[in-house]
Image (cartoon, rainbow, N blue to C red; front, side):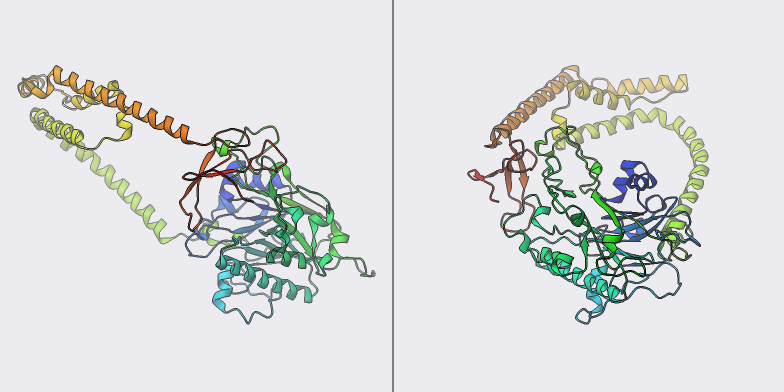
Length: 561
């Protein structure tokens, strides 16, 4: 069987990219597909984004109401099966759970079925319930029990080096998660953990690793899990490809790192536990060495294909369709079937809002209101038309005078109001069209010759000798507007020329830089600066970003590494 993990950077954009959820899943050609960063809230779980024929799905969505965390993160595990009931397929889990702390409401499923599940983590006395709930409320883990092994689909938190709060959150996240793994292994369970850990373990896994790169506490923790450091886990990709360099799974979207493969390997598959073989000497036998056939990065999913991308130029006018991550897969061998079982109650097929059995009160009222309003509008249209026909006969004689007054008010208001930048560039012909269209409002559709005649006389007597309609004044107005438009165009051209001349050129390529603004909180927040417009890449590559940096209001300097 085959297991794949993929940070999709938004499930809906990926579905749109492939045309349907089923096509997206089929493209990964795997029995179990673990996706991260779905960016779906529980209210957005609809059949077209969570259900596909031939797949059972298990979602975890963010429940956090913290600012900036809503509609964020999220993981889902899709299991490709022939049947969801009375099945002995390993791909179909016998049980499932949302989160890993055990405190989430309905974490075991949408139904009321009670069952014994996986071993709980021990030694969590140092965390209170609110802390545990916060860990699981961001939708970062789905656990599925496949009989022979327990699969964790995780999306590890990201924490900037100066963000103490998120660093503490990330430490707690992995500390509790490790306790859960240890509790399972004490019961003799085999474990597979897949997902975006947001951790590049070693210097070989990062494009620009510095001397102190491996001293980071999260990298130290990750390596401590591995067999070579005395742990119980295998980093499956690195164990299969110990010397492979430039094997990255994630690239920066802001700097075009994908173009020169300037990224990091943060998407992992790790395994621990004994092999499935019976009556053999356990020495030298484990799940990795006996059952893992292959593991690799699916580079064909990269957005940037060699030779197909134009020069980066700061990312302007370049649209790269796809995720900023590449999937990783692992193929297993000698995995026998298990006992007959049904899909767990956490399956999305049991979610009421997906199967359509439950409607929200708002949706019911809005549909009912819409139907009633339509009926009322249809009934009122006929009577209203009849009224209008009668009233039109009375209004036609005086309507030119009223319309004339209204037009004067409109003209006066438009002349006194502030003009937009776009209006200065408007051609005089367009302005004339607007005047004509406003004048055309004076005309009324006539059905009676006698009314039309009297109407024409009233219109003539009203408009005769009006000074604001004189041809001379109209020409003067058009001339004045043309002069303003030409003046604005010249001023705009002058501003553009000034802006172009003020943009510095980089030292490495002699090309115009691109401007950026500091968005990180601190003393330089909001400050503008210039950098080389080319995509990031190795320093040895002359075609890559040269590292030029200049503050918009200071003398140029080289960007510090």
